[in-house]
Length: 434
Image (cartoon, rainbow, N blue to C red):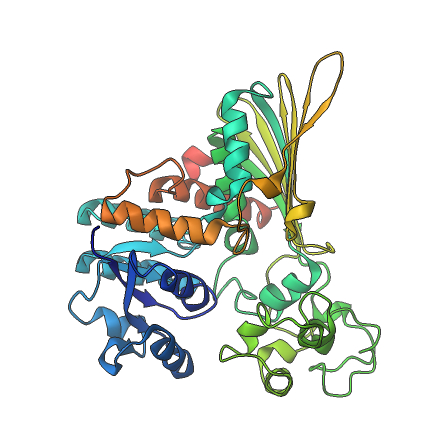
């Protein structure tokens, strides 16, 4: 057996520490965490304890860690969106292979610059498009390639962000302001652009898009609301976005209902307690009124894509849904496939309706596809293990590993959609945009 791959982690937030770091700890024969960096000293201290790192292996920033001689075989880049390319290129030039959190960058030129650097340095870069690795979408890919519905002619897809997820991550949270991070269609939906192009085997020719921020702005604030939810808000009882309700009383996310994980571990990385959550709501960004934040990302957007083979896709992203899910209808020359990926595996669906005299419905028991669906429907762990096996040479680069070039196609589609949205829905031809 080959030695474990040595890994350094830059960025110790929900993805870097809580996902890739902790998953890696489950595979000591494959991965050894040897260094970590973050600008938050509390997160560095937690990582040092959890990953058993000596003081000299802990750094106050990615830049400080990258100033050292090469420390590992791989660097996980899980810093903020607009830092990714700078950190990634510096790491490539040091000789690291990269596991790079999405999105790569909100700038086309930066995406291209990273692709050039990866080729120049001869290093492998895998972008964390984890949905390719989930059991449900791997099965969909298998069925589509078998031709069960013939040629895919049209795709109708939606990402249902979920009302509390939008409030947490994109109004109050780290991805609220596109000028500091990324546009919503890139940050949240480059997953979808990547996923459906890959599943159908398509290449995009042109894009149009519309969208806006409808609700989460000052003009929509109800009379009597305050800048913070705990500051005597007069509409607190009637407001579904009240922070105390979401983080303490919500059936899925609330501490008082038994939740101890996301999104509470974002508020209190050291381990949530009711006292610490209340402190975070009184003093931190997650206690702000959703109508009085600095967000500028859209809460709804539609995108139409024309493919190079003349087929089409329509995609909708919307915040105002009761659940967090992805839904798609693949309409083909011999039938239709419907795919619904939701949080509870028993509610997931893959169904096929063929064009025949019976018009019968065939279903796939999604629950039988795997034993573990945690972490993006089972994708996080599978992606990390396959990446490590690729770096170690145990496996050939498989069709599920998301290469940098393929990942960038999704980014260019998302960025073209954002350009179209901000220019009145103007059509954008991909060949001219990139």
